[in-house]
Image 1: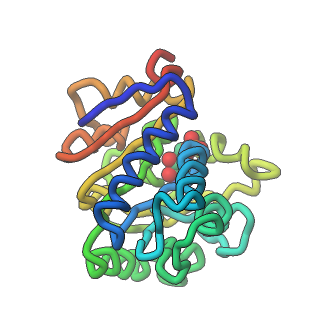
Image 2 (image 1 turned 60 degrees about the vertical axis):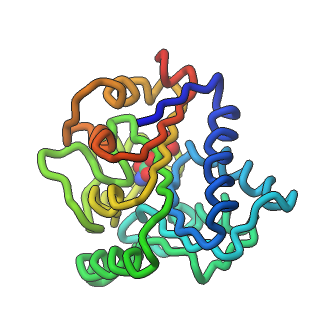
Image 3 (image 1 turned 90 degrees about the horizontal axis):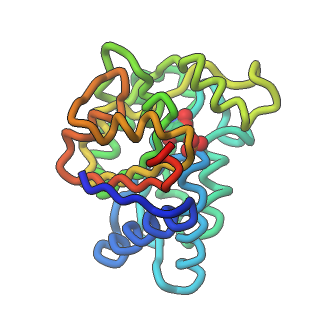
Length: 240
Ligand code: GLP
């Protein structure tokens, strides 16, 4: 794993954007795996700026997002589809028909999950997967547990994740208690992975990411088994 510490959130965002921009130049028709959460917002802004300046294009990009709350409609203002439109897709030249988010209203989430993983495979697999880290070490919505799922699946959210994510909702009761999420296998199949972490709240997980052990109790640590991961954090996340 390549590890980079940046001075602050803005530098981390720029470093992340640089890596994606390089891929877009090398492989304009690449498949991106995208993440939500507050962490990648700055990087998405920087990518939109570079796109407007004519430095990069998303015209031929296909994207697959990691997860979606369940049950939640795509036009709900807290849905991850809504988030992606507002924070990236509406500001770049991507063809929205080529952007995918797991269906938060799927009647049969297990079948939807299988189809989602199959669609990623059929698209040629993910070239670069963007990831944030939950304060408890979750990636996408793979929460700390003894057993983790391989494929895209329906899952319950832990109390701590519901609490952490309640800042985006009016009240904690409004936070969905379930989500559909890519599994550990769906994520690990990506050819390269870019992990971002910012702020003191991520210090615990950054420490776990940097030691020589893996545990399903901190799902992000399993990324140490992947041959092509870049982890970028800011000084606050590094020093705590
Ligand atoms: C959510 C998402 C994750 C994200 C995490 C961290 O639970 N499912 O994909 O990485 O939160 O969020 P933030 O970046 O806001 O700290």
